[in-house]
Image 1: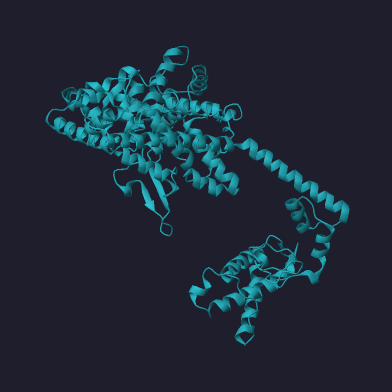
Image 2: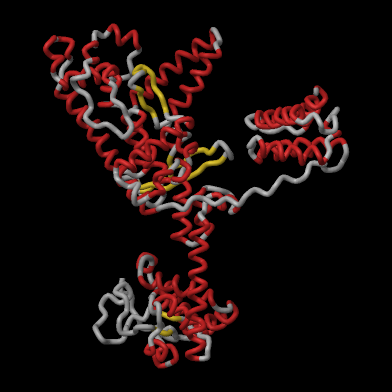
Length: 594
């Protein structure tokens, strides 16, 4: 079918796609050729213009039978749409693709993830203790090659490991010439810590002893999983962090020295993703990356030197195999996730996306070893992508705002959140909220024959509203200096009135920032007047005295509360009070308590 192939070539030339996406379109069109070969009873085709709707319907059936993804149909239809639009000025006869099934992400177990994080921290402590022990043994040891009996001491084995890897990993030739065969003794100086799923093979003694100084794949998996859970990065973004320089992977916070913003480039969409991290916290993302950079410094130096040599060789005599290794090493020198393999101790590796099955299996072994699977079944099927899902769900549950969830996901629109937010629990929570509102509403109507929104809100918050609270809401004498109601005027929160005397009415009465305060329609005038007083006061005191005081906090709180009212009414009362102050009226006589 050369004409179909030529039409495909023409479409791709006229409508070029990104270079990295072209193979997916070529693969989709090859599948179209396979479909036509498998269905010879369809009307014959000479070119793309001969396609009919029957071809589209049968193609859908063929895809379903062969369990091919919906993206295949989307790409084939795109190719046909471009062809028919150019040559016929119409849409292709292929029917629209079937609606995708609404995704239903797995419900995260936040308690289980928290306990899993603690288990990972225990493993991280063991790994760091192993590296400290290695440094201590090396400091107390001596080169065993200078005396035969020195090979019996474990600290001497570790000392030789440090000597051989001081600046970089030795090659096999350098290792064979170094007279270090004694390191192959599996009975001396084996690291005591063994991560879940790791196999410390005795026949690979030298490679295993490198763990006194450098991480293995399993050691590194501990820190990578902690990073994924803490940041919400997907695996691809975490592996693409570039630690060549400080400014290529984190930004310092402008106002807080103990915070940084870690970032990575998300190649799929060509944008950066960010995650905040504390600097001093031992197991936060920033500290973990900094530790790995320092520990793997000789490994990075080895990869950098090998890369330079291969590039020089390739310039003089090009080799595809050498170029492939150059591409790998370019990624290695940038990655923080470097490790050595016991069966190949002269080569530097970094974690790649293909390691997903091993990473998933590793975290399940950690959960099983910690005894978490019986109580938290969610961890038995945990994958690297679910670490990101849980962060997005956590952000939404605690903020109740999709904008915060979008920020946590690093996406530019809200539509993609449907692939991350677990809806079943959200729907249960929404139903419970609506049910509670209706229950309290009809109970209030039956009891009082009046719908009082404030009473309903109090009932929902506290579970009930007492007769005393009802009377206080209706009693104007109980209104505070801000014209608001108070649920408990004799017991203000300590944060509002730290010097409050027992069984006396609150004297501070900063009601907009108090959990007991309730706003009424008639509260607008005293609230607007008080805000005018505060702004008038702000112009009369030094800025340093105003900033951080309770006056500043109350002004911000009142301004937010006044957003509940008609702006025109607020402005009228505000200007009226300003006029009184300009005429010589005194500002209210309440003093700040901080």
